[in-house]
Image 1: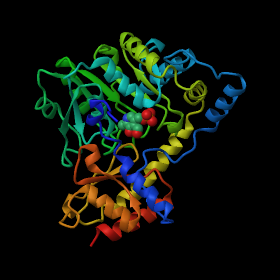
Image 2 (image 1 turned 180 degrees about the vertical axis):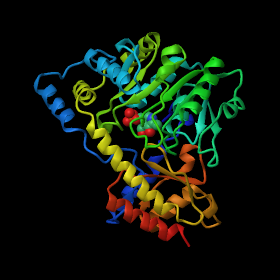
Image 3 (image 1 turned 135 degrees about the vertical axis):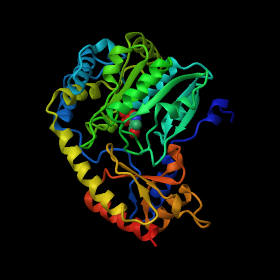
Length: 391
Ligand SMILES: Cc1ncc(COP(=O)(O)O)c(C=O)c1O
């Protein structure tokens, strides 16, 4: 069968290979622990679940407005106002999509022309380069080092700027490193990118998971000043433990929102009507589930980080946000285990722990662990990893 030539450019989602191997071992009765997951282990808040049930019973089971029901777009605008303490974002600046993922994809589809270059600080979330390629753009990774706290500066970006550079994707807190830009660092990057006429996508999916003393730093206020050059990608997946509901949103200029809505109208139409009603409740209901989850992740981060920092040959930064630990294991690589993929295979086969190879995030020699798992699972996984990694 002949598939389109486009297909040869796309790589499968990086976690799939390790996941399918983990599943295979599990099916043989082997007690595999997966730290490869990218989702909170919490339940969706009860009041959001109740709202979904009510929506079904009330018959809200039909098509809705493509970009989201007005109540949800208003709820998102209010959320932005509340969380970022800014005025000026309205429902006209919002589109609701099937997860943050579709929002990001659709932004790129709306804004990129063939050959446009997109600056992507690395380590990066694994889907950015693939999305750029699928939209005929050219991903340009901008490496950030352990020493720089896995953060880039305007000078790093400048070194990768060409006449074709069209866009920058910035992600803070970052998946996979957990690195968070502070206000000054973020302002310097936005100032540089705006000054060079670039379009900036600020992926703020983990904004509710920032650990003190770090503070939440958003591009929202900059969006109000430069609405034609900035968009914010976000969603309810992580903040409200709603990964399966598939609710993402984009904040952008009305013209961009209209274009994205057109794309979505031909592709998927509205997201699930029931999920939209659940999301209105999640955004407008009591918000304490967020701090409960955040405190729990903080406690687990500290526990896991304290253990990992005793491992000889492993370098790990204390993450300021999200729920991942990013381990640099390059000093442990040898002939038997020459790269991060081999290391993840070894951890899986011998220790029965699944982690994601850093290569998937543009950072070979590293691996990503999620600590969005229960204490006892995390403790057991770390014990197993220690026995393999530490001589
Ligand atoms: C950095 C980042 N952005 C966006 C997303 C998309 O999330 P969703 O499509 O579940 O809203 C994810 C999911 O893992 C992510 O890690």
